[in-house]
Length: 116
Image (cartoon, rainbow, N blue to C red; front, side):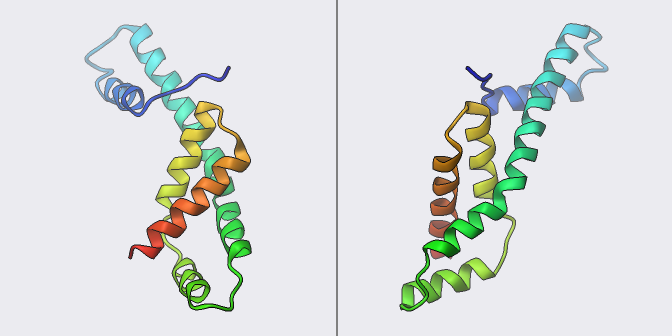
């Protein structure tokens, strides 16, 4: 089973790293560095798959109706893709299914864009 890292644990780890000068205990710093490394690895993995989210979303748009045109318009606007990136990184750390994660991230991005 893969190691999981909660957002609270990540925040705590980063906080401990920032305060490392005040905590010379190597165990505290080492644990914080491990958690940050896990998060960085997950974000790197997710960043490589964000384009898959766009491709998957465009594949689902049939292009003929007003909903499809609106979706294509919003998706073409680009953006930071913060929501799908976050979702994919968390799913990766938690050991989630890649295909389900990509589909969920695509749905999340489409819903977010539709709300703008």
